[in-house]
Amino acid sequence: MSQCPHCASTEAQTKAGHTHTGSQRYKCRACVRFYTPEPKPLGYPEETKREAVRLYLEGTNFRRIGRILSVNHQSVVNWVNAYHAALPEAEPSPSTPAVVELDKLFTFVGSKKRKPTSSQR
Image (tube, rainbow, N blue to C red; front, top):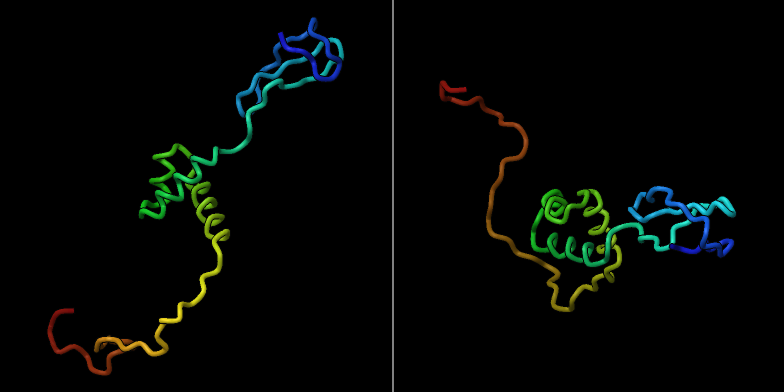
């Protein structure tokens, strides 16, 4: 049986449920205190977080990563954002051009001045 960390008694220990992480709780009847001898850490392991970021960098969306790793998709979003915030600021490379030339591409923006001539609408 376990030993109470407060009064060091080993005689009057009873099980008292589990914590929200799944660890067994005990109650010492000698000092009437609750304790957990081997508590489990909160949150997900670092391996799961790294795997989520790796999957995201490979192009998998947040919800699919959540389903694959059995975690909430919002946790995946938070891990990716934390990873992004921890990256060093990118310095512009010296070979970055000052002027960029693009292909000729015309796009229509705004409203047409003439009505369509076809009978279809």
